[in-house]
Image 1: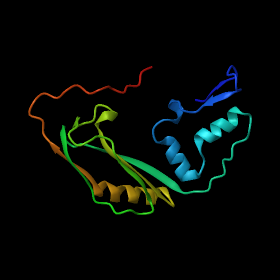
Image 2: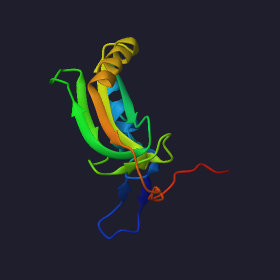
Image 3: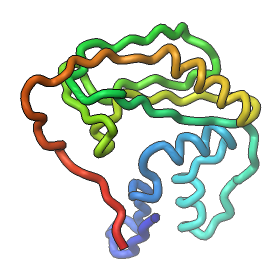
Image 4: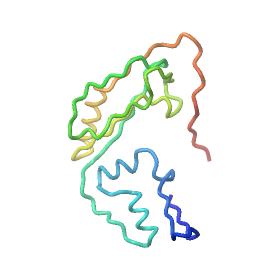
Amino acid sequence: MSQISDMHPLGSRIGCNSPGFGDHIPLLVQLASGVSLPRAAAALALGRVPDLTPNRQAAAVQFRYADTPGRISRQLLKAEPVQWLERVVWTRPIGATVEAPALSIDDRLAHWVVTGPTAEVCDEHLAVMDALVTAEMTPLTSPRPAPAHHTACVR
């Protein structure tokens, strides 16, 4: 959610770095439609009409999690650069301990973002990348440390 403050000596301030703009949603929207959510929110906050003209395609993100708990011993990326692969990110370093099934976002090994002309083509691209992004795990021989934090939704 954007915040506006008219109390600043230089005029209005707009903050677009809030939970509404976190994670991958703004990136996927911009890749798929060409619309920048933070820019659109800023335009609305200033009483302007944002440009929401779609001009792109489809986009998708997929996360890699470990099949078994352990310590990451190797990360393998067999992909060549292709136009539809926007990014591949290793989110945990070699040597990190992760749970399986995942207990929190800290247990994500990697993620990748793809684009395509349709959602069906994006699904095909995700499947290709799923086979090309792998991590090898070493089983833990001692008790696992507690995760750094948990993510929970409560009412």
